[in-house]
Every structure is written in structure tokens, then in C-alpha cells.
Image 1 (cartoon, rainbow, N blue to C red):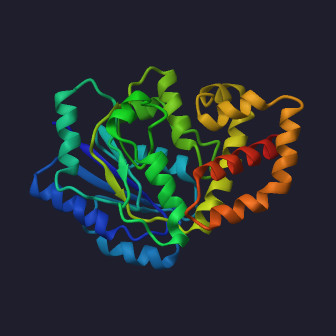
Image 2: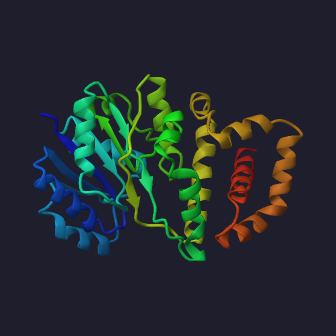
Length: 300
């Protein structure tokens, strides 16, 4: 019998609704599944809230120090017992009653599969302007249709909602050298690709239940580009990330005089771009230019 470990890294978020919905499906459909939470040193307020569901989950591990997005995912290998791991972001929300069962059914129909990505959604109702940037990026760039995801299975992969066979994760760990937010999911996907691990895509989305403010999201963008710049300083990693649009553009113009020109222009336009982005409802081309300028600045 297949056993599925639902692995949820938690950081400063109330996961009670998500966990209770998962447990309800497990019990109702008599699924062979466990729920494991690892809290990455959240604030006391959130630890207190989530302690209310200790009796619901099969494991609730509290870390004294924050270890980051990659290391915490690898840590589930020490605490989860299933043959397959389902990783969910803590800000996810179930939008269908047969969410877990869909993964079980796909595995049963495709016993050779080793990784599956189910997709993501956000509310179709636009938020107010102060939250618009993150929502717009999700709608236009992240929440791809199944058909589009299948065309670029590795570049369309995200870590918010995916299943991986335990024995594959034991061989291909998340790269713990990068502890900050950003691009660790795509690096992991490219590591899978380099080992010829197929990522299957199905229509089994989870709702992103926590859209950040424009200010918070822009800070996360800065952190992600900084993380990407660190990755690109290593040849093997750069090669594996070379198909990302931002990296491809960087490589195409990373020679004199274009690289110096881009850095010069970004020096005088970064404040303008930030102001445009913080307004919320702006073209994502401004975000693309901002990321590119920042990457050149960090890589000089």
C-alpha cells in the first residue's frame, strides 16, 4: 500500500485551516497518509496558534533556529515515513475535497512516476492596489494552465504543491548552500532534469492564500535576485539555470559595453521603477527591467 507523507514547512503562518482540511479528507476517504509539520522558528504567536493542532498531525517539530527553505525540506527525510512526500506551502488552501485522492490515483495509474506538480491558483478577484503586484505576477506568470506547464515541465515547476518519491529526494536534495528566498525551486527542478527525473504535471491546484503587499513582495524580489546572483557565480549552477528567461537575458548582454550601460541606466532608474511597481497595477515589464538591472548590479 502506498503511504503519502504530507510535509508542510511552517513559518509565521496559521496552518490550522489547511491541516484540518487535509485531515478531514484523510479520515473521510480512509487514505494512507500522515501530516508532518516542521516549524522554522516562527514567532511565539504562531507557534501557540498551531499548537492547537498537535493532536491532528503525526509530527510537529519546532526548530530553535531558522534554517531556510531548502534545508527544512531536506529535514523531512528524518521525520516522514511515506514512500512519497507531498510538499505544501503553509499558506496554501484546499479548494477541492479530493485533493489528496487525486495524487493517490495518479500514482496508482502511473506506478513509475517519481515526481508530480499539481499547480496553483489565486483568487480571481483582484485585490486592492496595495496587494496588486504579487497578485498580478501570480495570475500572469505563475498560475499557468496544465497545457502550458506541460510544454515546459521543469521551468513550470514550483515547490508549493508537489509530490516526490522519497528515494529520489534522498538522492537529489535541495541545495542547502542557498538559504535565502528565491529560485531554489527552479534549481531543484533543474537538478532533477540533470538526473533525468521526469516531472509529471496534473490539474490538482492549491490556492495561494496569502498575497503579500507590494512593499513586502518587492523586498522578496530583491532577496530572490540576490539569491540568484549567488547561484550564478558557480559554473555548474549557472549552466543549469541558463534556460530561465532572466538568466538568458543576463548572459546575452553580459559583455562590454552593454553590461556597464545597463548598470549605469539602472543606477538612475531604480527609484523610478520601484515607485511604479509599488503602485501595484503596472505592467510586469517594469518588474522584468528591475530584476535585470539588479542582477547586473549584483554581478558586477
